[in-house]
Amino acid sequence: MHQIRASGAGLALALCLILPSAPAAAADFMTAGAVAVAPLGHRLFCKAQPRDCAAEGPAAAERLELEPEVIALIASINTSVNATIRPQSDQEQYGVEEHWTYPAERGDCEDYALLKRRKLHAAGIALSDLLITVVRKRNGEGHAILTLTTTSGDYVLDNLDWRVRPWRDTPYTFLKRQSSADPATWQAISTDTNVLVSAVAP
Image 1 (tube, one colour):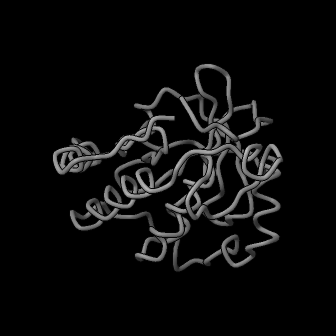
Image 2 (cartoon, rainbow, N blue to C red):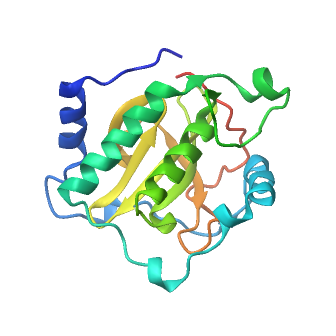
């Protein structure tokens, strides 16, 4: 995958893209329903990193407000992780189809999402607003992204796009994501939930 590095102008555009242009409507938010089977890689990740899969409790129930400084933080971390981590599949790196972990130098889609989630949480954003999400690309391949839930709608942080975009403006079919109440639990967004998430290229 070709890495996209955002210039100063690109970061400014990313800030514009995340700014809501109108009051949030119901369609700006994903509708998560029944409990879904968690990806195998995430289940193993939770065994290795139980603190990162623990529920935060009622104090984290409120959605994130997109204040200007928060928007700048989100855009900066998204572009920084995309530019720093080099794409490499789990099969190439670990010899298995799925291995979810925090990347140091290389990783695939879910590793980018995990690192962005950790960095944004360390900066003060609740884990209940940072949800790993499994989607299907147009070519049928599974892919993992980070969903940011806010009072203005749901946004996508993607290793294949330096922009932070409303979920409806992406080319994906959304399948399932983490529950905001319990990071170890997953909820279906559509009926097809059995996909591998090892994509490193569009």
